[in-house]
Image (cartoon, rainbow, N blue to C red):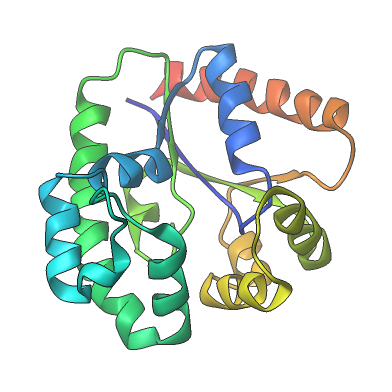
Length: 199
């Protein structure tokens, strides 16, 4: 199946673009949603994470305390690497399982840490949703309880914007209004349908 890897920095609008492509008929697999599945209470992956990081990252109902875990791993790169060594292979395995059963004209894999995990090799094209850093920060502030320092730590942990854009096959500029974004998405969808037919 023709496959597009969709990525971008935090707050860039990846989910909005994925939702629009999905509404147009693309098969969408979002690794953030897969991560939530794998870290649900009682899941073996969450149990492995708790075994490494301790019960302080769990709530009283045995669900994951995401804020506690995020605070811990973004302050210490070694801790983040330990978490990623558990989570990323499990996410990739589940993503490929879902991809194998997908029935759609083409697939969109939403992978925030696409280049950081080397998963760009799984796709035929890379689509980057791009906004300037100050826009990222303002959007994340509006939708979450994160402080600016926390947001900046997350931004710093991701592939630099310039490098991400340089490695993209397609770039969506999402700094403007929703109508402008939807127009770009529809254009790309038509292009992907053509590429999928010729694969």
